Amino acid sequence: MSSTPDTVTCLRVTVNRERQTFHIQWSDNHDCVFPLDGLRRACPCAGCQGHEKMHELPDPEIFQLPALMRWENVKVEVAGSVGLRLTWDDGHNSGIFTWERLRAMCPCCR
Ligand SMILES: [Zn+2]
Ligand SMILES: [Zn+2]
Image 1 (cartoon, rainbow, N blue to C red):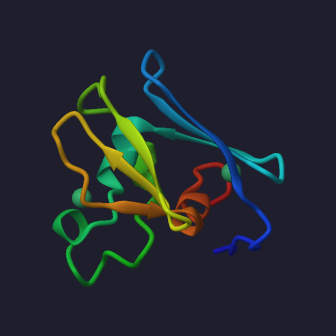
Image 2: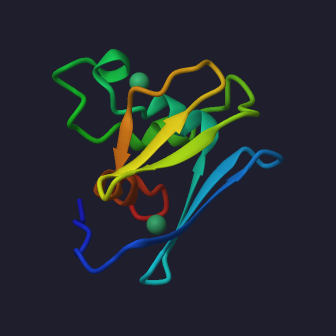
């Protein structure tokens, strides 16, 4: 697992509803593209992952699984300097995806 140097910051976050992707551009010119459905499954909150697993990275395979549903109304908020809070169509928003976690989960880097 590679750790993110503190100097790398997130420049831009884009949700592409048509392609069902979540796109993060980092200041070191790296782009991470997550399938929305996979990212929903990767929600780091205790409710989704359980208390023991919430600090572990999810299995990379969750980003390969076929999407179970389309996400049409995903809201992205910056949670201070910590990371991103996503609000999903189902109203769920308890998970904060830290920058470090988002970068570490990047499907193309693992
Ligand atoms: Zn959750
Ligand atoms: Zn990557």
